[in-house]
Image (cartoon, rainbow, N blue to C red; front, side):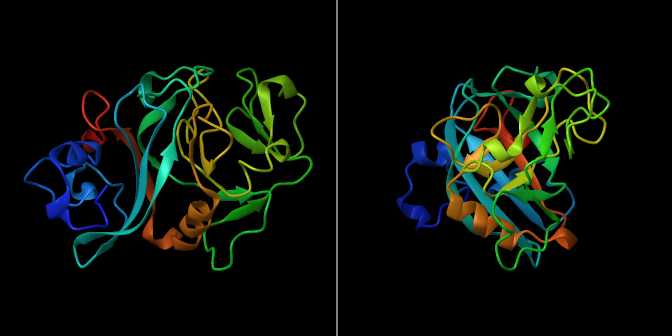
Length: 234
């Protein structure tokens, strides 16, 4: 992510952590990506390596043909690091890398003032079905359908802290592949690494929800500094 301080003071090692090549510090990270989703808003979530459980998240606006950073926050990833989204397996506590849309937001708290993305309030009977045998696999359901076992699903209201504010990450969402994974969100930090989601401090989630505009087609790109899951390949 592009740093918010004088680039001349950034060391080569710091540039590597930010996904920028030495000598290319003036190039914003989104401009180095193969694809940004075709919109004018982008969130980048980058970890130093696939084994990392923390990194940096930034959100960007495309203005007059140039990507401009709108904010940044420390990020947490899966307890077992990151893995290529196309080969991810459910239950591995890994965060899928790749480029994804952001279908809608939700939360146990009301949407922050100014939020324009679709936002669903979490209710007592709000669940995310993760049962591979269910027709509702990787979907928000109210109430839990008969073919979706509670033991294989998330009762969203049980995570009042993490799901105070959240955005659904469109991993395995449009045409779900059973066994690949369900319920991957951008949400508020819990006590440590996630079960596969990306998390940030609560104030950052509030700012992101106010910033995101459906008409600008925001996406999220998740990846590492280099290697097979390098953020710049997405």
